[in-house]
Length: 215
Image (cartoon, rainbow, N blue to C red; front, side, top):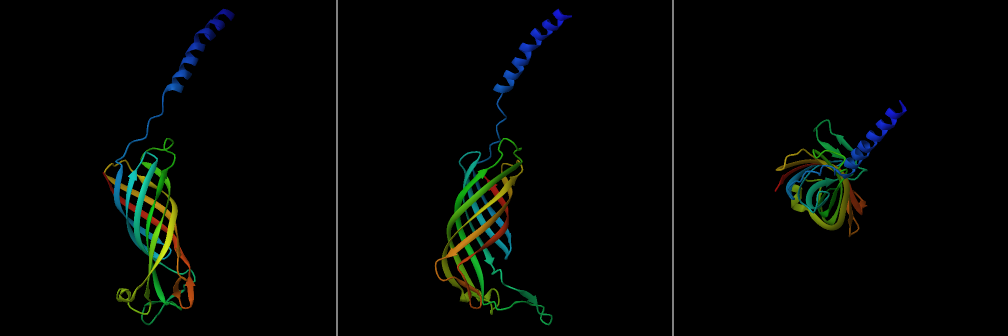
């Protein structure tokens, strides 16, 4: 019995060692490769309402991507209070003097997370961008579209940081979701959203849905 046990150990030991060695040298399956360029559009939902934008991305590698994007959205003062006039059914904001809009042009980097831990149909990432921002105001007392005829323009510096994910294995179309926070600092004394209240910084949180074309 002792001889059989020793013989079994001598036979199985090399097999176990060989199996472990194979496990060490077999590399993990590499992530899928997608086209390096993406051009697309953003639909933004924020604390201040809706916005639209466009973007271009270029992949330096499977994890690092350079991007540039441009967007247009409204920015509201957190102190604004809205109520509905029961007689006219119109929404009114107490003390509101101007509508404020932000048009940031951002350039930045996007870094893919968990490249080898997750399947390619879910590609999470973090991203951040900086760049110039055009801020414009229109008088609240005038009708929404007609008020753009009396718009004032201001230059600011801004940027955002966020996280998101791209979905699916399609190599021609991109669908993604990005959560980002914008911070924009004006060079002048600020913009007057509410009467007598000037804001030196504007921005806010946005949920951004991405639709793109890869090539």
